[in-house]
Length: 332
Image (cartoon, rainbow, N blue to C red; front, side, top):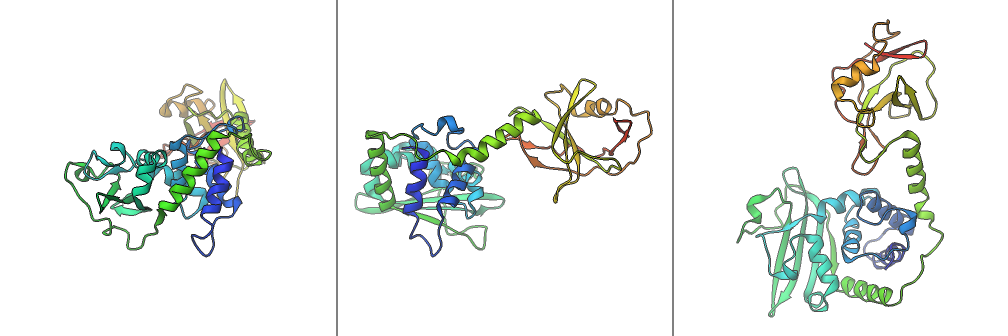
């Protein structure tokens, strides 16, 4: 099954889940977020690649997020939930929630035993989000298997138990999958794998991803980049668009002022082979000159380089801002 086929199927299956549900555009946004977090294949060149059961399970977990743009983050958090009591005999001894859902998709006998799968991104424990409960039948009796974060070490020990109704959050939302969802999903997956089809549509859902990739390339941002951010209070003309400049064998990214951020300079510590503490004298190559204006440094955070790289780090404390003299950047 292709990602576009799965998106259409999930939109259809979720149609009666609430008074208002995801539109196809909302579902596309969920899948874009999942690709950004590496939960689904990235890149237009992979749009014709069939999804694995683990990737399909990730798409299901992405439905838990109330906002489509948070689907990748929520799926990443919930995917790693582990069964209470440690190793379980149910669901093929699945070590994580993702493995358990994948096992359900692959085995009809297990699907027939499912009563419900309850998923929530609420705060189950102090500063610990994510909870899942699978209710299933075995030998004529109902059983529950709860999944928690791996920080809850005591709950991962043999014979441990937890009451999923007691949560730290006073209010929580849940998404519930019943047996019918897994039956219909498994049937469509089987048909799609038996009769593969070419990619659907023109791949317009990848346009934004392609544009972002080109932007990162233009600004020299890579998955290994580690940027130091420096807010700038300047009295000179500043580029109105993002720009990559080179100064004294070092490369800097200049960001213009926006509604949410001041204008700023960013230096890739890894690409320029700089340690954070060494970057100050490197930028201040002309530090002996008087800066036009000095102001407290402001922290700036921009998502740019990748899902795991936030284009900015919080190591600018104690720095003061740069002045400019004859196109030479100087830090005081």
